[in-house]
Length: 473
Image 1 (cartoon, rainbow, N blue to C red):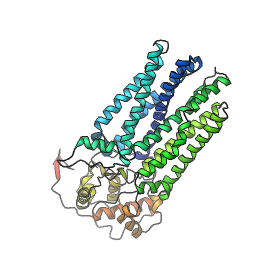
Image 2 (cartoon, one colour; image 1 turned 135 degrees about the horizontal axis):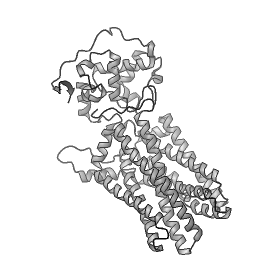
Image 3 (cartoon, one colour; image 1 turned 135 degrees about the vertical axis):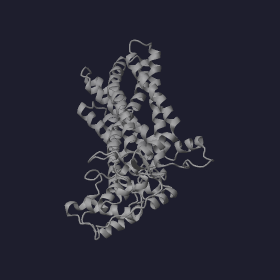
Image 4 (cartoon, rainbow, N blue to C red; image 1 turned 45 degrees about the vertical axis):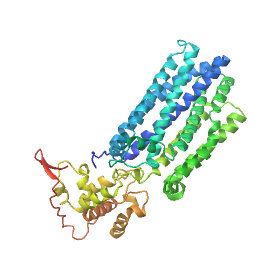
């Protein structure tokens, strides 16, 4: 643990990241889909002289700026803040590998924001052709931003032929493209593009109904224009099949029955998408009724929740890794040398921020086992399991014996495929077992026989004195 522990009581850092990320993804998908709708609709309205559609696009642009640009920018910054706090090692790895990718994405994001504002404030100021060009620039910037981010996100689940850095033969440029053009890059881009179009198409109906000056016939006409944005949603099923056929069998099994939570969220996302597709065809395209405000808001909420569910699945099936086969969810590297070093020295020797700054390791090892286990838990488990909150350990081992918890801990990576294996010394292994039993038992917890014994740690050579205080380097 090379960085301080980020604690959010009850909620946990991982769940906090997930909540911020899901909100941002929904808003970002809306921005991309809205860019396509604006560009195509403005082109069509410009050629036909459609005053109604041009008036709606002006109003829709205001909605886009208030919701997507303002909220999207805030949550976008929020993602960087939260992932840097909750998963600094993983964030650092992505920045170092994709530094030029992030730079390119920020250029496209800047183009998107500038073009979006120019488009809205350019009404009655720009010539019609320049105004139309700005609309297409906005879409290009938004979509290319999605393309770059999609490649980086999918890499975390399916690194493909990418090889971790190390050795004199490491080629950063080759590693970048091998990581970016990973097996799920293109199927994920297809599914995300369809999601962007669907969310934007539904938002058109919401805005059309929100504007009180439109008649029922006008709202129906505008709604039909947005409904065609949802027509390609029929490709969502083959796109999902393509995507899941590109992931590892372990990840696929998590979504298709291996994990109850992943399976439930996956099923909910599929059912919600099918409902939206059915309502779009029979309710908007075929029968062409006027969708009321309440119905359009409900559809938008279902689309947002379905997108969030699929994002939850994408994050969940990557377990036990942050970056598949490279870094575990507790930010410990997966390579053999790292595990051997931790098993030899102890996890606390490599996780200075897991225990209080006013203590040295020798003092930690003299504590009762359950207290040592608390700091081991901070280093190896706290990233996903918040005591008394998200993924709490206590209900999982309620009334379990010391022998059972010990056996599970010893074979953690084999018995629980979505969890990293335990790493550390025998003392730390026994300590984390006692801390788990303490979490489950509370005041009823009974220490093991011989609890009066305290671990005796030898003084390693890496323990040095800095500013009159012994700290680990």
